[in-house]
Each structure stands twice: as structure tokens, then as C-alpha cells.
Image (cartoon, rainbow, N blue to C red; front, side, top):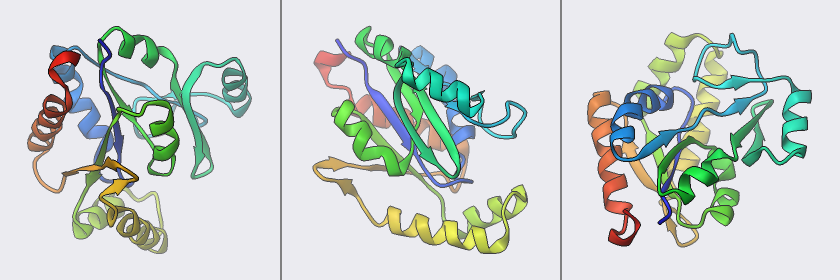
Length: 190
């Protein structure tokens, strides 16, 4: 029985890292795993719990087939370790921090994945990005415009994109994520 791949997407500042960390233990109790991405950035960078590597190391790993999924975005390379294939085959559910721009490729490899878009009200997202202080006001406004374009789509082809609003309490978002997983798991896949 295969597990479910939960493909979490959302704009910078939507709270993906916080949601992933908060969902870690509840997912374990549901036979789930959280994946650490491999990213070409310094391990000291603030943000998600990722494995930071050099571009050369990333390319070597990619050539060796270490990644189940990989993409390039925002000047960085991202890889999802092949370990997820073993977990899924063993019936474990797997949560990955995915890329909106890479969803169609992920669906080709994992046609039954559960695409989840983490959304946040514009005013909340703007405030979070400003508080973080990583981007200029112009860059933040550009992010908000891109987010609005992507958020306008409810599906990709025949695949429904499930939305989770993370404008409020994180505990509510975790509960909603777990409920989505429960609803998506067919009785013969548990």
C-alpha cells in the first residue's frame, strides 16, 4: 500500500516552515514523515530545516540520481531526496515543501500526490514579509502580485489544488492539513 505524498506550496512568508514543524509530530502518529530539502545555500541561512550544499555538490548528487524531484527557483537549486520513494512504497505519508512552479512535473512523477497551497491574506503576508526584512518593499509587492496570479487557479489539469488559509492560528492550519490527508487517503491505502 503506497503512502500519500503531500506537496505543500505557498508564497514566501505564508508560514510553510512553521506549518511543517508543527505538523511533524502529528504526522508521525499518522505514519508520516517530513522531508528535509537539499538546497544550494549556506547551512547558516535563516529559514527551513534544510540541508545546505554547494552548487557543485548539488549537481553531483543530481547526476548520481539522489533526488526524486529537483528544480531551480529564486537563484537556488532544490532537491527532494529519493528516500521519499521508499517511504511512500512502505505506506508512509510524506510531507514535502514543494514549488508551485514545479507542480506539473511533480504530478507527472507522483500522479496521486495531494497538492496543498498554503494561502495567507495579503495584508498578513505583507506584514510577515516586512517583519522578516529580507526583501525590499518593491520585491514584496512583486511577490504579492505573483501570489495572486497563482492563487487564482483551483486546479492544474484534472488535479484539484487544496487550499489552507494560514492567516490565523497555526494549530488550526495543522488540524486542517491533517484532515485533508485523512480525506485523501482511500480505505485501501491506509
